[in-house]
Amino acid sequence: MTSKLPVNTYADPEYDRAHQKTFAPPKIAPIKSVLPPNVTRADFETALRDLIAIVGRTQVFIGDALAHYIDPYELYENDESKRKMPSAAVCPESTGELSQVLQVAKKFNIPLWTFSRGKNLGYGGPAPRLNGSVALDLHRMNRVLEVNDEQGYAVVEPGVTFQDLYNYCIEHGKKVWPSIPSLGWGSIIGNTLDRGVGYGAYANHHQYTAGLEVMLGDGDLVRTGQWGITNSPTAFVSKFSYGPSVEGLFLQSNLGVVTKLSMWVAPRPPAFMSCSFSVPEDEDIEVLVDALAEMRRTSLIPNMIWVQNFGEILCIRGKRNTFWKGEGAIPKWRLKELQRELKVGSWVARWGLYGPERVLSAQLAEIKEQLSRKAPTGTMEGFLYTEENGKPLDAKSIPPEHGLMLAGVPSLFSLPLMDWPLGESGKAAHGDYAPVLPSTGKHIQGWVRACQDIYAAADLDFMVDFFMHERHSVCTSMYAYDQLSSEQCKNVEKAYNEMHKVAKDKGYGMYRGHVNHMDEIADLNEFNNHAYNRFVEKIKDAVDPDGILSPGKQGIWPKKYRQFREVSESSRSTRGKL
Image (cartoon, rainbow, N blue to C red; front, side, top):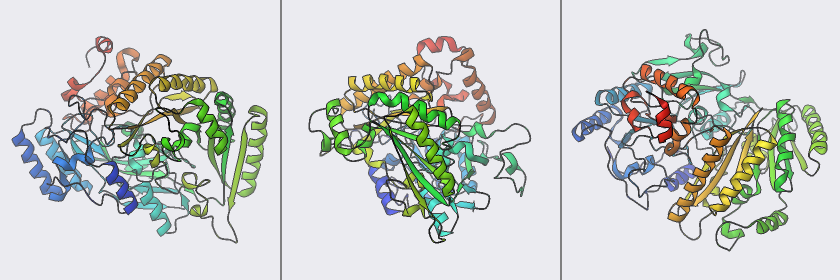
């Protein structure tokens, strides 16, 4: 085993440099050694030797190397009672090695915290919910097993990133445009299982899977759906199962370890149109949402719509001190000046259209006509790119301002956002609160107004984007801060807690949860004495009776570790026996 920091986590030098920068050793408090709960030092060291025998000495990490396995944006580095810390990390390369790792964990009663690439940044990254868990890092299981461009699917292992899949498709001449998120370094499986989204066709990734391979806590390997039939030609093209469909049990889940996943990918289109619609004033958000939401419901706009406020658009263009030399958040009057200077609206919606040129032109004409009636102060633009001289449309040839994520070209586009609050020094960090709201102007405007007041009270720049699906939107209220500033850390914690109060009052659930808040968010499912949580925990105890797989993930605890659940006293009194 080694205490040296992992190297060459990514083959791409740009990605690896960004990874090393993000997971640089903590500057506030050093990494301290912790043990798994109720495990002696002697047993733990024996377990580490057994893990080394499975994966090799260079793939078991302890000590300072665990800088790559904590939350790089941790708010509580100085508070050992809150800081999330693994005891070690192990990196298997195959299902055979993974099965053996699980047997060691079972033998020594060591909890594991599973992740693919650890890039769930803003939500804890690779940090465990239960201190002392061993980080189960699957990034070395990184094979693209198949890309079928005739039927439009890909089959991948956990370590395959969106950039890896893109490279594979280019190298093998595949006629597909996979959907991607804003950062190409994340795992396809990790993103999909956490209900992540992309920006192009098939953007709601978890809805476009058909067939998972899952290893249970005892090492048993299960394939779901038609993939449960050996050599089934419909393994990756049909969601139908004979009997219950169980794929959903492994989304945001600790019931098993997903080792392979099939994902539908869109065919390369003959034409692509990059669309945007902007409105000039902050209060125009209600009109914008209602107009676009109707077109999503009718499928006139068939793909996810990404909406940003001016504050978030600005933070991609530079640090705050580029635009404002004063203290604290940029005042409203200065934001209006910047809008005029940069010729950008208060809200900008973007989406892509894919298909034959004549169809896209007709879609654009109808969208423009409807928006001119329903949101007359807005500005609609469409930029068309087509095949030329019989040559297929090359996604990379589309200018970045119109393509990138919308055209399935991975990058580190949004990474500069984190640097927004920094001056000459500091450590960039970010987080967000992301509730699921109905796609109505009333709901989204109400949320925006509440957040604006909360951000102002915490002296934070208000930056928000939301992702409009057919009937709901995921509203990501973001904040960037200097992790080395105790004042800024307190401000973002305050803002998060205030947003949670508003969401709880309105009945809004969360799209995703930070490891520090998983129990708090799960506690929102209070119907019938938290019946949903009790039901899933019955399954957890049945399929993982030793409780070794990611205890506490999404607020689901195995019986062995249920005493570590963190809930309010009022909730504890109504939960009954769990």
